[in-house]
Length: 411
Image 1 (cartoon, rainbow, N blue to C red):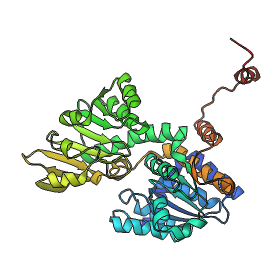
Image 2: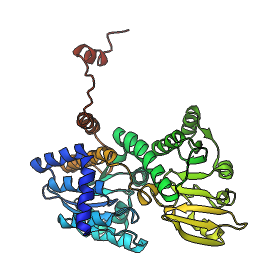
Image 3: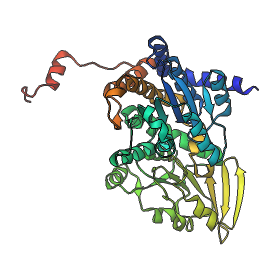
Image 4: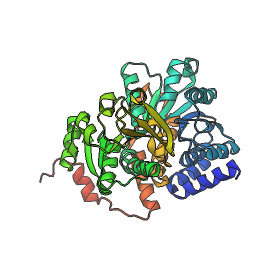
């Protein structure tokens, strides 16, 4: 089948489950809030992203898109976007050098605004393409990992333009991070291994919104879930929700499946790998392929069997016990599966689209730094989603509104 035709079908299918973003795209086509703006984006090149790109293009933007992860790129979607007149620099499975070359090619657009997923594009702008910084007046970041890096840049006064933390909206954290990551991570693991989770011990590293979603769904499928954490409050939260909390050095001995969801590096290290059970499965749902120390795994192994199943490599350690690494340690939900359901991305990308329009309008008055998405955008996305699904909610009466804004009423 022609790649472009296949991509169009994928995009059309995703759009069916994305009524909010579709409506925003129609509004953008009428209002043209992005007329004349050039946008460079580094995002997962998937059908859901294509719907977002379509909305921004309808708003008048010229777009250059690179992939934020080569293993998640859908080549047919990339080709369909090219046929729509967008510059797409992405191909599935490229090596690290090509990955960064594609980001540079997207930046060759000399963007006014940037969209990032992990902060690699913004990092390159501030280190290798500083000649373009003067023309960039704002950006958006989609991930927890990216926000961590951006806040550090801002703290060191290295960030040169305002960036909106799209990841930190309530709709994004609750639905995308918790429900989307929870479902899609287990989907990827089960596609890659065909393993049964009921009765197995699943170790979830990190109990943020993403880790919470993974833990909830693993528990719902009958797994015994152990949580590892460095944050005392999150560890207490996990304990009060009924999860067992242990340090990784203890969990490593008993776990059947390990899922890292932290945004940090070396969460599973050589000393953990050395004591794991025969047949233990390693999967990462954090943004970058650094959470599981894959180099240490390579050094420990006496044999490596690539592709024992799709997206599954088998490492044989001294003594003969085997460890199974999924998706090369990259995002398992986007590599071994299709990422978040389109209905989830409808809200995340709707917030992204509205944040871009807000940036285009307000950027001149914003100093460099990391900004929260305005609360009214988050509320609008939630209201539109409820309306699209036919759900009605209550409204405050005049008396209730007065009560909430008065301190004189007493009890």
